[in-house]
Length: 472
Image (tube, rainbow, N blue to C red; front, side, top):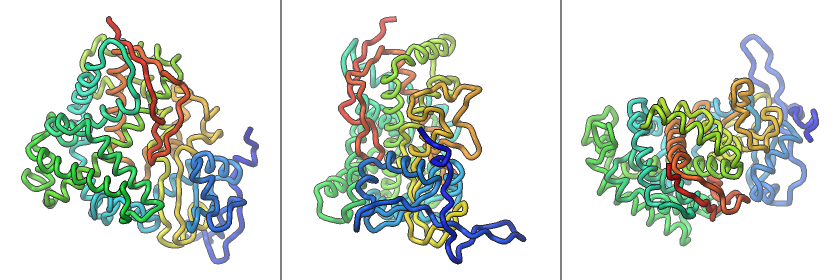
């Protein structure tokens, strides 16, 4: 049970010389020191509980100390923030204040230099602009049809009944969807089902790089380099001329200047590296989102009749998929919101304080690692009633616990750097589960699902599901 004291921010002590930002004409208020988590071991600080159960550790400490706190993990001082007010303050700070490039340097070794977060802000903004045509309304209309067809073709081979691994099936379906929609059907059909394994080598290497130099001669780093080269070769060979449904030109040809574009042309290697980064961002987050949507739903099978009834009603009058029809899947959407709340794809949102800062009255020294943990913030009891309970009804009109200013849900980040592919991911997950729910009766072989210790924390495998195809 949480006491009133536990849910209030601790006040801390004023820091000599630090001042809270104030409106013009008002005297700035003295900033407060971040409350420090007690305990910790010599040299490593709180590394053991932090790495063993990151979400649980942060949630317990924030419930005890308030919305902001600090602790040490080995040689790194961490400033952790938790709650809508401080989440928004961090997400809306400029990149000059809170630098994202600490992660970017590791990503640069995985995806290539000057790609995504390893690029300067102006270069990354230009790269994001290149992706926008694939995420605009007209393109999304075509994607809805493509995604449904991909899911239907994938599940057509399942037969009348059997068992599948939920995580593997969702990863392969989302990989087929992202490759078909972002590169083209030729690439998707030739390479799509191989993409999860190749991206998995990149993800493993990224995780290890937080502990061991990413240039060390390790087998996982050699697998990373071979996987990236395999993807790069396949993209350069198959992507030219390949275009998704409804696109006037090949996206790869637009990147390399062989099709009209307002952006400068990239050479083939840089264009391929950028496409790999897009595939990683789109597929890994969407696959985890889709897997947890299904895993939580099947752990609570009383919700299955509700969703099946919704699907049957919607497809009675509209037999084909469309963005408008997907938007009307409110109950499936509520189950997806609950998956985002309990198991967001972004486990932490890291930044580095580029200078001495004051964030919502708390002094954050230069060099501190600034963390937001969406899964901890989503479990605050003053925001979500009975927060550990799976309850899609919390999003119904009249409750709408996810509404608020600032938003209590940050599973797709927000502020100055929102996830560009949020609508794409939501459409992919809805398309996938719409097809599966209309076609099969489902049950978990073992309802005791645990979290895998990977960077995006999907359900641990094996996560087996029995299915039986409906005859009607």
